[in-house]
Length: 286
Image (cartoon, rainbow, N blue to C red; front, side, top):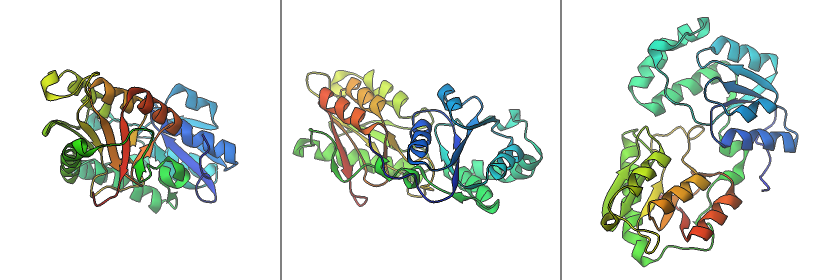
């Protein structure tokens, strides 16, 4: 897949957890010649990220993180990948993190978005520009309209509207970014378990509530939180999302165009076409 240039000028520090996004961004930097270094969060980053220049760091080793970034002459940072909320009581923070911890704990009580905003502020205060994954690789964003051969029909309109409405509602509460609706009923709302686990729950529901391989029904909506800091943690669709939606008997997936990341776009389109699901990028006001 051809992806647009690797973001802005200057060396980039990628601070990475798990999943496919970190490798996509690191490989893009390498392919386009943008200088970069990868700081792999211990216990979260995928093993293959060790192939890139950088080091492994603990989630509470803030002094070491800043030292490594400055020593590498990084001008910007990008947070990418999945990181579970830590057990703060078990963290072993270094000196910089100790100063940082009271603010982190206060922010964490206000929700994940407040926690991420606090983290970004600390890195900006240290002098780094914070880039979102979409700044590094603009072509990862879901465009307006269908992605693949399938398109939603009038029969899907009400389920799309309901799923989007509920995804926005839980986003207002800083709970999650996804919801599933089928046959006019809300089947599931995403919380800390993530989209894949939510879809697995849906797959266990009675066929009367959802679709199946013979007659798909229902929609997964992925939507950013209204209060969301969009440089981190944008909703993401990948091949596993498509396969999970199909296993749950759903007819399609919708997301906010320009604010939803699509990982491995050719693979996602191929999976959607093979399984007969639509993927639709919707205007923000939808």
